[in-house]
Structure formats: C-alpha cells, structure tokens
Image (cartoon, rainbow, N blue to C red; front, side):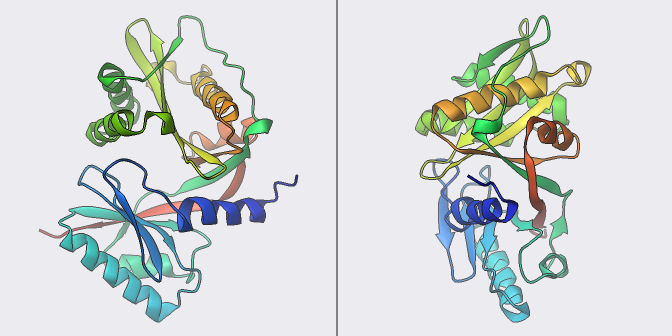
Length: 265
C-alpha cells in the first residue's frame, strides 16, 4: 500500500479533525457549518480542531468571531485555534491575529505507518521503564514534564487522572526512571474508530538527553500501537524531536500552529 503524503494528510484531516472525538471525559465535540471545536472545563483543551476548506474571507471572519463569542460565553480565559498550513483561506492566520489571537511556535505534523517503525526498546544503562496506571505515576509524569519543558504540569495532571479514571484503555503513559527519579515521560492517545494513535510528551530532563531515551519511548509506544491494531502514529513535533522522528521513519505532512485567544481583563 502506498503511503503517499497527500493520501495520509487527507486521511488525517478526515479522521482526527473533521470527525474528531472528545479527547477526554467531560469534554464535548461540537460541529457547526464551518468548524469543529472541543469544549470542556478550564483545565481541558478548548479550541477549534478543523475548519471548512470552503472558507472564504467573509465566512472565515464570521467563523472567527463566532468562536470568540462562544468560548467567551463559556467563561474560558483562553482557547486555541489549531491552524494547519493547508487550511483555507491562505491568510487565515493573519485574520486570527487581527481578531486578537496570538501565534505560538509552529510544530511539524509527522505520520508513520506503525508497521515500518522499530519496536525494540533500547535503554541506556541504569534506566528502566514504568507505566503510568495510578495517581502516583501521574505525579511522576507531571514532575518529569515540568523539569523537561520548564512549564506547569497542572493541566497534564488533570487530563491524565481523568483519562485513567474514565477511559484507561485509550491512554498509554510511560516513564523513564533512574532509581526513583523520573527523567523522561511520554504518553500515547489511542483514537478508537480510526487508524491513528498519537504520540505526546516525550520530554527528557537535560542531563539525560542525547542517550536514546526519546527513541526508546517511541519504540515502546509503537509496539503497543501495533499490538492494538493501529495503523499509523501521529506526532506534533518540535524542532528538537523532528529530526529523531524522521530518522525513525516518520514523514512530514505539514506544519501546525496554535493560535491562542486570551480573554481580556
């Protein structure tokens, strides 16, 4: 079977964006004529995941204004419009900025057929893997995330605890441990009814970078995805992880940029 870029991108758009499913308990996916959005509590991800390829200038501005009104009425302090490079109209990002959104650093969307990925887990000496199955594991995951990325892990705690409680079979969390210390964490979201699973996280604390831990966590999750019958792995990659993923067999499909709207005081 060919894994042509355009075919994969069309499949991704249809299965994970246009027909998106809630990414956790207590959230809902809403569909309007021009967008698909997710709404939940303040600690959930709130935002637009898909916009109609038929948007023109007038419809785009109307859709943007509608989302600002919608999420503001829900009392959300912030929400995201997840824009992909092929979304239309071509100046949609500029229109979002004019409406008060702020662009965050872009990421690269990569996809790989699971069957083509290495699944042998090779760890440096002294490092072991531990799956995340309870609140104690979630705390270790959040601690590794905070140390690796330098950002607050409160939202991650909330989302992973909720997922473990309500839908543990759709989530895989893994830690790389040195003794009792978490030095890296990663997770995989399984999207039932699609051929895709998504890789998220993968942050490693500074002293342990460059030793193959990131690659090992990818291989571990690829093996589980294969065992559970998923055909593709998807990653929104930073510039740091993109070259590693490409060496493992991931293909670049496009770029994605978060445009964030924050409610004014």
